[in-house]
Length: 296
Image (cartoon, rainbow, N blue to C red; front, side):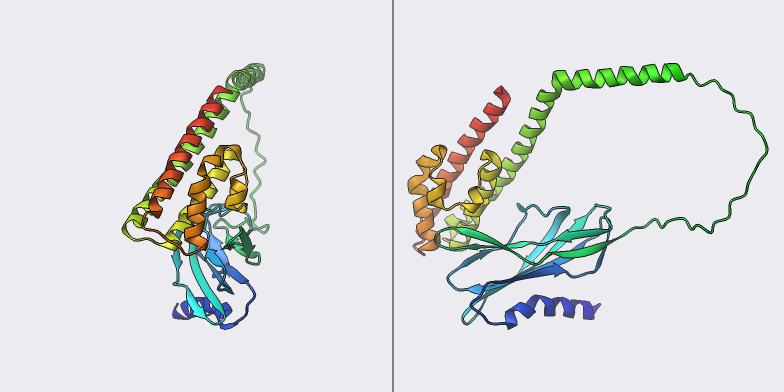
């Protein structure tokens, strides 16, 4: 077991041992197989120039067929001429495919925009608990005749099946749109609660201690939620491009001050107030979008 952890440490630190101005993102599964529902570790590391800011995926990220159980990040290390970051994710999957694939990105932020650079695709084998029955199993034949009562009412069964199909189609035609709206609104409500809790926690931290990285993380969290709410590519756009949307024009000064704090290093004591404005704006947009879904 200690040998396995030493191997994990070596794999995570290996990219750090190569100094280069180039961006290098590496990642992969620690184990080579996974049981259904069992935890598995995935490591992700990046070495990059000092002029960039790095964000690793967190609980808001879509891990494809995997669920996030836990994550551990290491403190950013400095080694001329750049930085090195790494993280280990604990995931689990309930998929039954024999081979599952995953590659996670490192999100790099500069003064103009943000870019996602993915680690190479890695695969892991699924361990199936039920083995196939061997072809060599000998079956005992029993040719003795046994009469079975033929009292199955097949016409009645077919009538019931047809009636159920008609009822199902009728319910779908009458209530299908309403059911779809219900599930869309339920999903948006869940995602908004998660976003609101995360942003509130970030604002509380920025009140106590002005933190450039906390502001950067809060901005990314907002972009991710707005992309889901508005169906627009917020995460791949700069603040200037986001202000091109009609609904975001009122955030001109807010986003300008946030960018100045994150990318210009001019972090003010009242930076948290800008994110309170972001919170109020998002709550207003959430109400407009959900009301539009209800009325259409």
